[in-house]
Image (cartoon, rainbow, N blue to C red):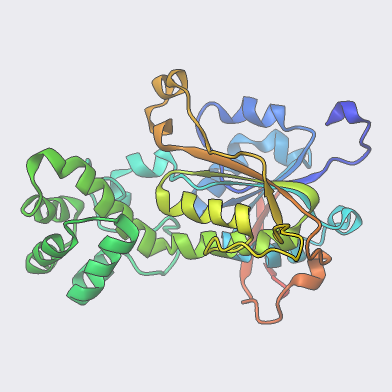
Length: 331
């Protein structure tokens, strides 16, 4: 911190941006950090306008990319300080969907608003939409998605109703199909699970999360931290497993002395959750769980040396000083 006499601010990442009114004072508390925000295009444009002082001051750099390309994006940015300190001081993953996206009916994220069945986090991408999947998928694939990503016990009858209602174009049409096979007292929670499952599929959210969870150990230096704010059990389970064992399945590996061989040491035995007061101020915080772990000295490799040669190349759009430029990530 500033009181530690540190001459160079540590390099850190906050991997999601809250666009609410709390953002500016929150960044004020982090002024001694160098921050890189990974954003979708929509949030990127808003950030460049609202946080001009932080961007111009060299403390904040929003980047249009995704979790799985963090490593190659760092190589593209070519940061001497990162090489000097041999890794990041910390990564924070805020995995929630922004209220701005949920409340935008045309994005199709909410079952409470009528809108197009889109559900892409990045509306500028040419990826599959929820409409594309629902109107072309096999019944068995839809059942699997609802079970695996929504943990929905009525997956089979709901899938049958959705297939029978095709073609589907709007969220209200999807809601009607779900309601036809769901007991009334359970409809709200069932809707939430179905919409969650489709959103996770469309955006490959768990694939993105798994990629950064496994790569984080290559980026954070020993003694650095990873903090993960998750909002449902599928995310939290993966975060917990990696922090405890260093792998996604949670299976611990020990040496002959019984010491756990892991890249991380959990600092929170149980996840930190919102207090009643915090939930009262923001009801959507009730499902949030925060876990934190510290990087151990197990299998430390210089961050640049750990870039896999098969890592996909991606043109990352960088927002520097409010102007976009294109660069080729080194992979």
